[in-house]
Image (cartoon, rainbow, N blue to C red):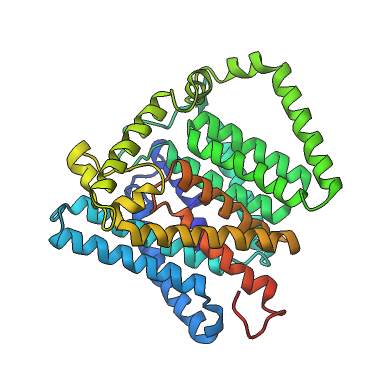
Length: 392
């Protein structure tokens, strides 16, 4: 819980404080350094738990750890001998992504909802983040973005923290009032901060999860359908007001021009086309990091799971597909039979990462580690008493 607090809400608070010049940016961009600090004790605790309870290490855990090892080996070998040999920034990006995913996996696998004090601390922290955020909104714009302060991050860093904390709190409290309040505040922040991908993924995750859970009964289906109709009617009657309120945000470009015709959509389509062309050149092994030569940026990879095929070859791509579907199917199956905070959170992150990899995120996106960890956390907190001698 402490590691989660440091990596997500702590990150948000740190960024606000350095951009207000209240504290110096002694941790740089924060996430990399803090991840390294928490990684060692998390790794130690992971091995301690495995030694204590070997059966808690399931097939999904082993598959995830092997995939991270595979990424490590591919990255190092390409740095030493591959087409992109000597590109240190690319190696740093890859190894950092592995560390981020492992840290998130360790956190999620042993995340404990039964600690009421920790849950309250997380809720209070979220409310503190909301206050800090809206105190720095001027004319509908978050004034701390693009401040030029050393260590300051883009909108995506802020959005990542909001999404992670919000989903955990919604799964934790599971009341209609709490869900409406948390969702409304989170959506407002994501719109103002300008993170379109995280906004769409966040809203889509909650909507899809709601429908999947309610689809198990006629009453649930009827309620979900009625809620959808009411929402569409409200938006339809107030469309002009809603569009006017979004005019100064990055979301307006999506609404006005469509996702694929927006400037961001066009840029991402170009990266996908370039990535696919390189995959066709070498479909078995891919062409690790070749986009750095073509576009001059380590961020010029296809913004979807094709990035895994391009960098890791067909083995890495199949490995990711297998894990994603395993996590998603497991979360769906468990959530329909055992609705509690653990199963609901596993479902949230399974849907989120599935759609993220399909539409907008590279294979090293750290929520992948969270999704696998929360999926395996189900065993610790739901099935452990039912299946004493079996790992789900």
